[in-house]
Amino acid sequence: MFILFVNKLRFRHPLKIPLLGLLCCLHTRSLSPFVKPINWNTSHSFVRNNPLLSLLERCQSLLQLKQIQAQMILTGLIDDSFAASRLVTFCALSESQALEYCTKILYWIREPNVFSWNVTIRGFVESGDLEGAVLLYKRMLQCGVKPDNHTCLFLLRACSFPSMNFVGYTVLGHVLKFGFEFDIFVHNASITMLLSYGELKAAYDVFNNGCARDLVTWNAMITGCARRGLANEARNLYQEMMADKVKPDGITMIGIISSCSQLQDLNLGRKFHLYVKEHGLELTIPLSNALMDMYVKCGDLLAARILFDNMAHKTLVSWTTMILGYARFGFLDVARELLYKIPENSIVPWNAIIGGCVQAKNSKEALALFHEMQIKKIKPDKVTMVNCLSACSQLGALDVGIWIHHYIKRHSISLDVVLGTALVDMYAKCGNIARALEVFQEVPQRNCLTWTAIICGLALHGNAWDAISYFSEMIRCGLRPDEITFLGILSACCHGGLVEEGRKYFSQMSFSFNITPQLKHYSCMVDLLGRAGYLEEAEELIRNMPIVADAAVWGALFFACRVHVRQKCGRRQGTQGI
Image (spheres, rainbow, N blue to C red):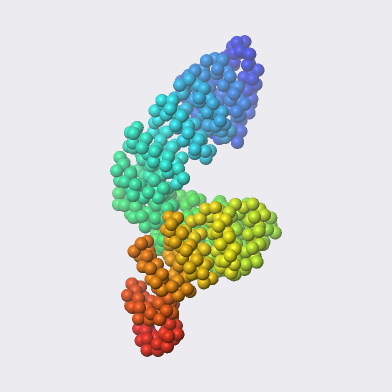
């Protein structure tokens, strides 16, 4: 029957050779492994009655698609919206993914249905062209095509990035406008998107006011909170979920075990691991990696290693997690042994072991590994540079830091906020505050950490008024200082003997920025007041501290008593401190 159909076309249309060639090709060759399979609806009556459409199921390239499209034009089949949508689907979702050609077909066909628009939007989303997906949606609305729940679902997924929040809120408005808020899939995608923006309250509102909650809904909330570092919220949600008698799955376990990693709660993490075993949940690779990460961060390297050794297939994440754990706890020989066994040559595990060495204060070993990387011709990235600059900061190795800075310039590694901050910190801690200030001005974008690095650097070099000036400028830029920033500005006041300024900034911590002073802040203030001779005020500050004074706080007061020859004061406070 199909051959008769082709024979008729052979006499009717001049494109008989391409079609016959294509037909032979599709009958004699299997589907290329590079072509992503599409779930075609082969049982559809329209497909059975139009054999030309079934050729799309075996189509392997854009060239073959164009040959089929030519025959569809000649036969008038292209005017059918269902037939045209299959052409669009191939362009949008196959491995060939010709999105530019896909949009040309979409704009050319007469009255494309909503499915054709949806599948093209999905293609843009899956290819990472999020702006293209949004622009296509605008064109869809301009053409008078009403979106459906699938349209909103794809757009919500596309907007689940903080940079897309403005568009995301607009899409949420359209969800309400077109009445899709009660669709469970749209409901879940809305929660995920809001959590990606850090809008916990709004996500809870959607979660609590939705039409229903399925396992995916709970997973979206738990996983979203875990990804945003809201570990306690994730744990509370899990308890609510169990109270509602919703049975968790592997995705739930990944989210809740990640929250245990953040809380460093080993006992709770073990309980969830036991739950996985007792309830027969599949120990997938992502779940195994999450458990390993939890054990590493909670200090149980043996449990992590047992999981690692029992994994049938180890991913790069698996290797990196284990290497980072050994490096962080100082077992560098074991970390190196694993590093050399990794089957794939990647920068990621090298960054892990170097970063682990820096965290363990083994900075010489970190720089030695960086040198070894170069010998093995493994190209470093920004993460490598940041870790090595941190090692230089710990060692005070200015010469090595300068060499790394030259390496960054020579290899045209862009100076973003993270790398720029690491350079500022390195120059400041290694004694070259002038160069630190130069780099600070060169950084194209500065965040709180960048300002903190230069403020602390100026304080370290005794430039108190300069540190205050930069702190004031930081506030004027609308940035919020953190605990470390205030520690730097208080240190600057201490080194400069600026008592009034120190009192002001110490007061601002609580009243203006809602930051609770820690022991280091109290130690700095006691040192400032003591050096200036305000011993009674320093004593009063210690007495009114909401936390128990440590050796650093008492030491600052004893030093001041000795300087000002106040032996009675020193003995009295020494008695209280014992």
